Length: 129
Image (tube, rainbow, N blue to C red; front, side, top):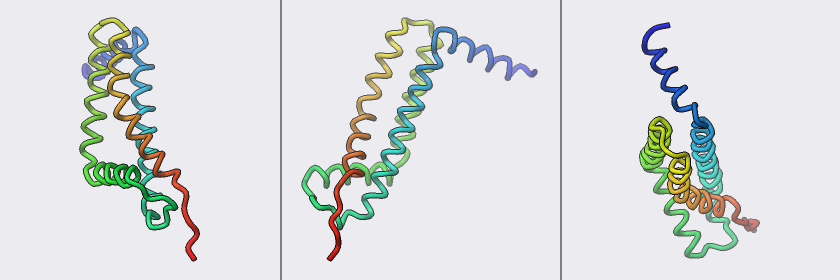
């Protein structure tokens, strides 16, 4: 094996030494869940003219989802910062609670966005007459 591959394997073993894989896997699952919720909300937003109830909350959530859809670099940048901070904390041999606290603090906006997406994707449609 070449030196770069050995260096990567040593680094991965360092991250994985104290349970780093579960925190990295949690980041991947969280970001995947948010992406799925975003996709489902986008599908339902195409039918917005058929929503049974169009209140201010719905309009606000649809504008946020539309903003993220037209500016995907925001989500990519946020996910990159989240993943980088988790891997950096895992590789520094700090206490495990700091890793999970960082994950929790970074997860709050992502979960709020997923909640908004799920609210839009579960809207009741009216039957066109």
